[in-house]
Length: 120
Length: 108
Picture 1 (tube, rainbow over the protein chains, first blue to last red):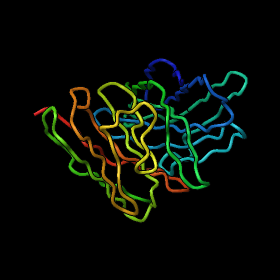
Picture 2 (cartoon, rainbow over the protein chains, first blue to last red; picture 1 turned 120 degrees about the vertical axis):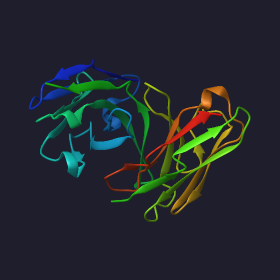
Picture 3 (cartoon, rainbow over the protein chains, first blue to last red; picture 1 turned 180 degrees about the horizontal axis):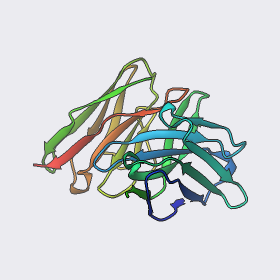
Picture 4 (cartoon, chains in turn blue, yellow; picture 1 turned 90 degrees about the vertical axis):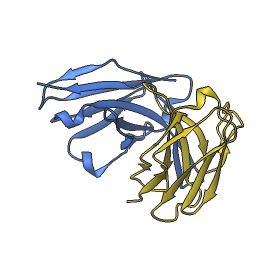
């Protein structure tokens, strides 16, 4: 199970940090992806975090503005996004990574989502 | 980056109908495709991975097929709870991972 933090309202230019607490499996055995969904729009992959060693891979669109981290002691992953604009208004999801055959990635379990609203 | 194109974008059908949704990849992705169902206000739910493997607990009326660049999700007999938006996701080796634009399945 992945349980995310509550909704946030931020002003343009601010930062937001969303948390995703994992339970029911070995936290450091599976990575975490972050995906966002703007209102009425589709799903957009933001990046991946290894909960084992902290390695990350971010979508080019978010490079320089996003940081994904985790704390194994609390089995929690974090997404921080800076320099927010109204275009960042979206529901942000964490999702558990599944990696098969040394080459195939998909996401099996998802958090419930966290709505981030950016408004002046 | 690999692009995924879903068709149709909207689909209107009745309970009991058999429906299919197609996802085309811009390059060969082997069988590295998953299908998700998303209901309004909820997180996506994994239905099928590796193009045709049913996720545990998903009803057998859902099936997936295809490999390479063309994939299909089929629902053999629509149930009221199946009306939702469906997305495909390609997970070919290295990021970025991309989703199709979605297919909204509505009640006729």
